[in-house]
Amino acid sequence: MLKRFITGSTLSLIIFSSLTQTVHASEIGVNIHRDSGVLSLETGINTPGIFLNSNFAYNPANITTGMLDIGVGYNLDIDSLRISPSVKTVMGLHTQSSNKYLIFLGLGGKASYALSSHWSIYGQCHYALQVFKAKTINPYYEMDGGIKYSPNSTVSLDIGYRHVVLNNEIPSNVYVPTEYLAHNPYLGISISF
Image (cartoon, rainbow, N blue to C red; front, side, top):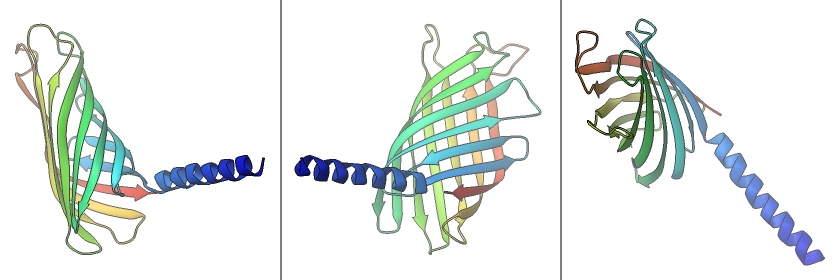
């Protein structure tokens, strides 16, 4: 009886400790582009090991396009360098396309280098192909890079450039064969909790 109690208590403590660490490693962020915005929610992104992330990009001026991506990856730290390979699913709403809803499966990664305890530089790239499409496969490219300032462990500010391209399957006079969902500088703020 005592062994079960000690074992149960130990397992509960380990699980509670893991959940607490995950909760403290969560981050929510907003990036404002000239003509669009990105809302991010990430967990485990600031610690070595597995992380989950999601982003929602939307252009208020162009209500025909919106993108949601959900990904999983692994953070690997080598001194001040962090390499984060990841896999993501990108779901897009494109009302001008023949099938409106586009689903992509992609690979990519992010690298960041801490210049000091407050400053770091980062870059990321993802390449995805459309799935569930019989005739043509549309590629989706996402590249992002910038510099991040973290005055404390809770808040970070970043400035960067984001380039997201969706190649449409059949160009017409309604929409273009290559659509730039984002291709401009942005300002961002992230809050960790």
